[in-house]
Length: 235
Image 1 (cartoon, one colour):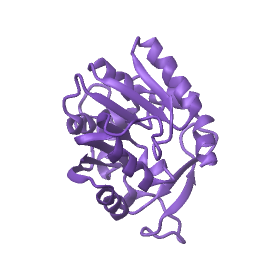
Image 2: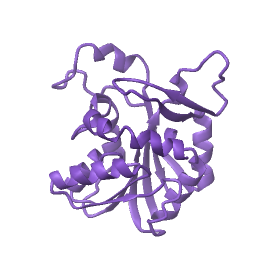
Image 3: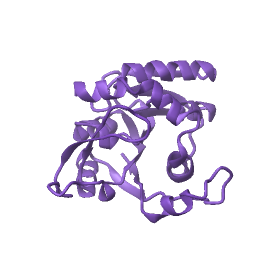
């Protein structure tokens, strides 16, 4: 676990730059429209941003008049998130906490959970889902979006149905990202094992390839294959 924490601590300031105030292009044009659709009305609700990173979603949810708790295992990510929240005058409770433990979150205290591109980064997937179920109120929901495992780049010696700890470097980052490849069926089983009902599923694509800011080079790349999967889970 320490190597995962170190991985994100050393990338915190760069991540803040990459994601910005509204998310990167993949989030803005592909997955966030699905996320908001799955999440539904949040005004007056208590929302847990599980793996909040530098806080772009937390701030947006706060602007929609939700009570937001943002947790991340990376102390430096939370530091960046607090700075960003202050810049936006957002009243958000940012905490250093592990998604797989949620030690700071009482049972049955959360209306809705957002877990955006996080599950594939967790060493303990089962623990996270069990604790998501624990902290949700009865009939609460969790929206989980993560990298599509069917399109993970695997070496010749790696098999899709194996669970593999992987390292990869991309963009302008100077160190590797650590993530965990798991087949889609593993996620499905763990959702059910934790007690969730799988109410909806999607493979986000570019919702509007003619939206302002959408670049021509993305018209094919963002629609050639699914970059992520989205689940709407009900307790």
